[in-house]
Length: 237
Image (cartoon, rainbow, N blue to C red; front, side):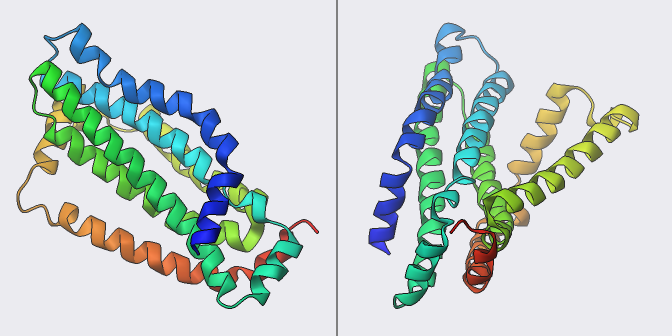
């Protein structure tokens, strides 16, 4: 599997180089506001860090969704299927590559958060907790969508994903237009509510999230292994 992981790096080297400026810019921008405006309030700094992290994670998500397309060739599928544990190693390399990439970016952002907090004299613990939730959400989404991409190919799988995401976004937009938004209060009040929720010492949801996410990630891997050969109907010759 290590050879397949190395192949992922080589094959997607150009894409990694292309998205690197975006990742570097928004990662570096986390430090700029506290240095340029040292009187930022805690919730303002956390908001800046969170927005930058969302951009970084979305950019990373767009890259991760495209790592399957290069291998969607029937000859490559036949070769992998003919090797011992080839299918398991092929699928595992994709899952491990995505997980390592996401965890690495989050680790770098955590260090940047600490630097931003030190520059502003602010405790960024809550921002780090939110960042970790972004990681689990990222892996959870990969766990949900990867079997679809494996089964129906990148084009069809991404189409199904876009339909699902579009339906969810449409629901949020409809609620935003016609629903009662007063329950959220002001932005500051909403952030305070988020802080109270995330910093509860007995918050079992946050404590169980990592374990549940990794279990679902493994289950998704097992499902994808079973679906790999069926996805060949949507591959190029």
